[in-house]
Length: 128
Figure (cartoon, rainbow, N blue to C red):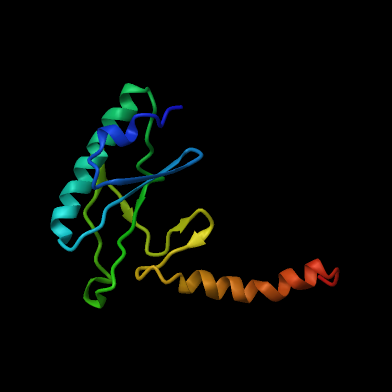
């Protein structure tokens, strides 16, 4: 109910992903600086929109991530803020139970899943 209208206040280049009370904003493109500026504007709009609905956004729980196939940019940290608070970069964010990585190959997630699989199988078989 509260999320109604969010996509209308953000530009069409900003994709909004919603699940329960989580909101993820996503932008794609080549020019890092342009997107950094655009994401900061998007977050200003999001903050205004949430304030009108009397919803409070928590910058401490809000993270930013940067995905790229360009190895020179792997360690890049975008300068993104929410209501004047610089957001922390999450190198391996977990989104809907999937651990992402810079290249979006999910290597860490696959490694963890493969490592846990024998435990899960033993548990299912009643031997764990």
